[in-house]
Length: 249
Image (tube, rainbow, N blue to C red; front, side, top):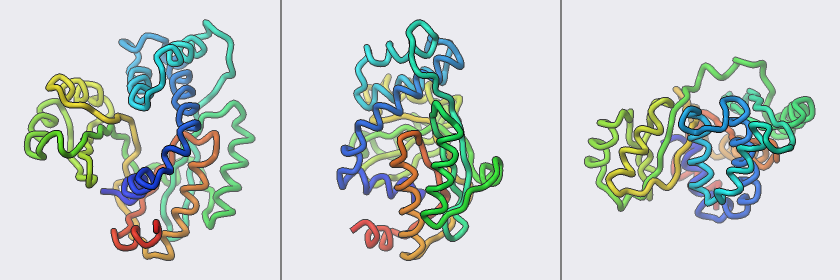
């Protein structure tokens, strides 16, 4: 399991996810608007919109809020126009970082993200500098107690999944991005509950960090994730469990 996934799991248990709930809703709504603007408002023919709606529903965003976001995206209602922008850089120790943003002013957002890198021991990079170290994947999370690993592996693999990852209290099913919806549908058809589903960027290699390096990298990651325009941060670090426990205490 990647260091980033472990760190997010710990933050959630400590209540950090609850504090960020307001920002999460805002990001999810923006994602729906951007997806509807790019591919139309019909989730049956717009796979990205379908994924974003599922992600929003997983986080309990009301359907009327989702529908209004779709109408703003398709131009049926007035609203601010957001665009998706990706920035790349390095944290300390050579850790590769991808920052995905939704913004109504890319110049402002770019300057602020660059400043966060420099203030937290990182460095901004040109487009493409680190993206080659990541692969686009779909991920689905389920309660570990709901199904055995062997049963889930058979079910998910038959539906097109690539891997099952042990996240401690949860199973994470990894899929090709194009198969995320089909795998989720197959899992839910058995009566199982998918806690969350999303498209993500998974690193192909990882940089191992000691306690000092972990503190520095996590400081940058947390600063980036706290920015209002940032929808996701991906990084290719790996932190041993003992070190992660020390830095999160």
